Amino acid sequence: MMSAIKLAIVGVGKIVHDQHLPAVAANPDFQLVASASRHHTVEGLPGFTSIEAMLAAVPEIDAVSLCMPPQYRYQAARAALLAGKHVFLEKPPGATLSEVADLEALAAARGLTLFTSWHSRYAPGVQPAKAYLAAHAPAAMQVIWKEDVRQWHPNQEWIWQAGGLGVFDPGINALSIVTEILPAPIFLNRAALEFPENRDAPIGAELQFQDGAGMPVRASFDWRQTGKQSWDIVVQTAGGELKLSDGGARLWLGGVEQPLEKEAEYPSLYRRFAELVRAGRSDVDVAPLRHVADAFMLGQRKVVEAFHD
Image: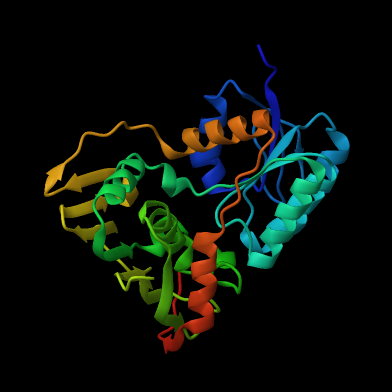
């Protein structure tokens, strides 16, 4: 039996407590041995205020999961790779495409695993949707991704700062599904981004894409949704309508809901990370982040009323 991968988590926040810790605890491939975070610790583990201090004090660490805001992820990932550790990157994998490209090259040069994790791709309906669209060419796609930022990111100032992505923090989850299930690449041709007058990141976005054959994709992202939250993708095909809802957790084909295996996203992510580490391979995909970068480069900027938590 192979020994467990000694794992450390860096950036102990809500997503770590909600998702990472339960997924790691349930996976025998990992043994959680330490954490690093400026303000929080994991009960029962050695805790440090920086990744550098943690790596120096716990040299037996094999791999790290980096869960801090994306603006700070590159330096932490670089430190881990230089120390010979495999790296799991929460989404988005970095604040810029250039950072991720540099980390990918560094991991390859040192024979280490780098994993850009897109948790929404592991929702139960995503792979069946991908298989359906491979057999039934899409004619049009509509993406509706609207939620209440006060519910999901209360008082998280980093997310409104430059590099925090704003509404693209959830919107990139939609783009990770879109880029996974479509049989051909798509390209942004128009975007409008709404920036609160007191924030550096957008609160809403309207995006228009098409693939090389002209198949249209429209996406609406909004962080001001109240009541029912909307995470839906609807695709028209010659074989009928495909609909993913609840962020990919449910799938309809031709109006009929499909039975799905209900494995949670983060356990699947950690199973994949363990496979990569054992095989000595990396999995680096920046397609969702590239679309966000294109939106910031191409998008029209509209200033809207101030947002306050």
